[in-house]
Picture 1 (cartoon, helix red, strand yellow):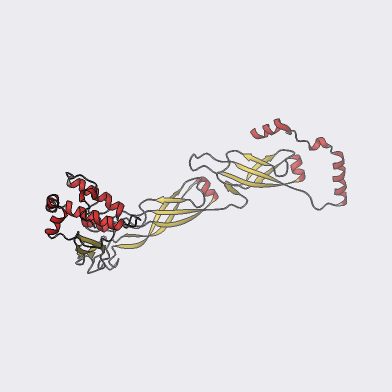
Picture 2 (picture 1 turned 90 degrees about the vertical axis):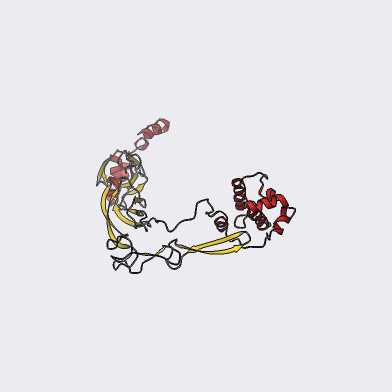
Length: 375
């Protein structure tokens, strides 16, 4: 607490000609710094009590005048006797001294409309639907304003009454009187559960809640190129708010079912083409699966095992640009595992006739690799 050696103006850091607004602003700043809810300094509580005492004196015109003329002795002679007090939370302090919240807003006059909660849902589509986009119907279970009572919760012909426990404020206050004034602690009214009103004759349909759960149909537009696990937000389709508050949203998670034989990587699609040894050597047309159906691709003669052939613009569309990715075909070459004696002899004869030139890649070297990069 302040002593005779501690000047109230110095404690608040203001001049003796400071206005009431300057004194109030100084105390607000120091309260935020020194209150035990905020500061970890060991003497923060004592310092806070000292500046609170200074504010209590300097914010009162009569006490300030007495202090300016006679100092601490004049206050004691006039009956001012500081004592310990439980200040509670920092929010309680601001409510007690300034009649407002910690952030400078006035006290609420009562319950306010509240936004309704959001609702989650999930749909499944196949890869073809994800490629082209699709519109589909979705049903969600959401609260809607009761039509029977128009959201009041009271039976038709009756109305809710103001809660006598909180006077309609939705909160109850406990007031403690200290030397520094009234310390006010607020809490949710247990009688009305914070609504500020009581429904004496509940509506039969909603049982007094003012809302009923219903199956709400929605039309969902799934954009082309959506990825598995992405969510679509449907504004204003969630649970109805209370006391006329806005309706929440619906978040629909889209699960994209995989397509056998097709692997998605971003906007590109990867497939595998299995060809025989002779087909790889001579070239062949192979059919691979895609979300748009079977797709034929021409393999050049001499295609090597593991080679990847890109088909530009045959992948998934981009969500951002709409431009399609690529279809990447990896070639698997199958080698025969069962040969008759005659077939084995024929293969050996062919192997003897084939020289190194038959296995030479015309694209060998730097120029060949450069051509492949642009192909």
